[in-house]
Length: 108
Image (cartoon, rainbow, N blue to C red; front, side, top):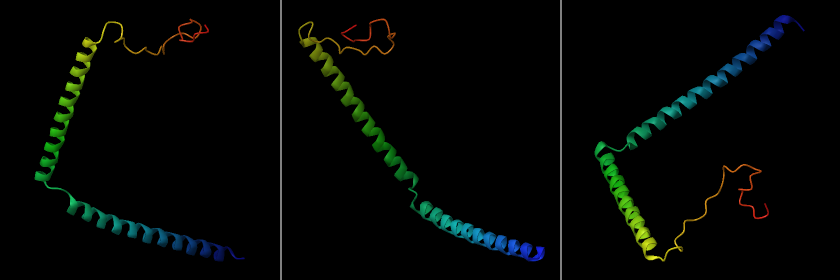
């Protein structure tokens, strides 16, 4: 085989690959541009965004007031219970040293 035929084959193969890549990028660019147009057309106006923001703020205010009522109800309930029954839940001892016996294991 002659070196010129090998070089010609490599040149043709690289030209085909380059053409395929260029066509692929062209299609992707065209589809991306069309998608950007769709998204820009569907973008809500400033008034719609203000309305959405107002609804979110109202929802957060409602959630805040509900949590405050829940907390005050819990405090009232804790005051009504007899002493000793409203003890807090036991905490996990995460920072205990392995050999100190403070791991909560009854066998140690």
